[in-house]
Amino acid sequence: MSNNRSTLHFLIVDDHDSARKMLRQVVSNHPSWVVIGEATNGAEAIARMEQKPDVVLMDVVMPAMDGLEAVQQIKRIRPETIVILTTAYRDQELRTRSLEAGADGFILKDDLMIDALQKILSAKEE
Image 1 (tube, helix red, strand yellow):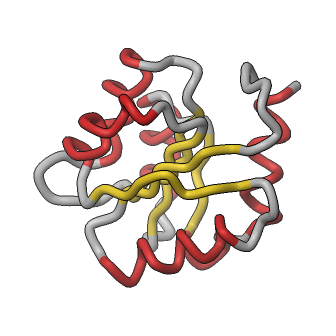
Image 2 (cartoon, rainbow, N blue to C red):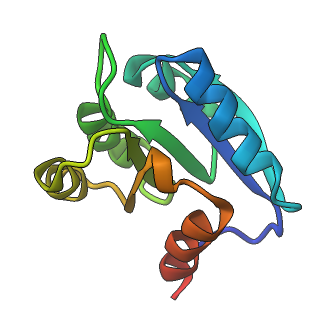
């Protein structure tokens, strides 16, 4: 990762308040991870890229602009940003489409824990 800081800054993107709260809690439970912003759709996430998050944790299925479209634009704006897409749907095709769109990782919301995030982030450091 091109991040020289020990703290990772996260942007959380999900159209459901309860999901954003859960994602915020998972991130906040790690001692060197900080949530620096939230958005309710991909368009809002793109508008918040000036905050320079290290990691965008984003739902795939959202109104206005979904995660698949947003990840492509985020990667054009800030290619160094790690984008991890999340979903509640157990759909292998959705996982494949997410990674093809440019996501650095894909996690089912049911499996979203610090360990799962660390695994993806560690793979990006190599």
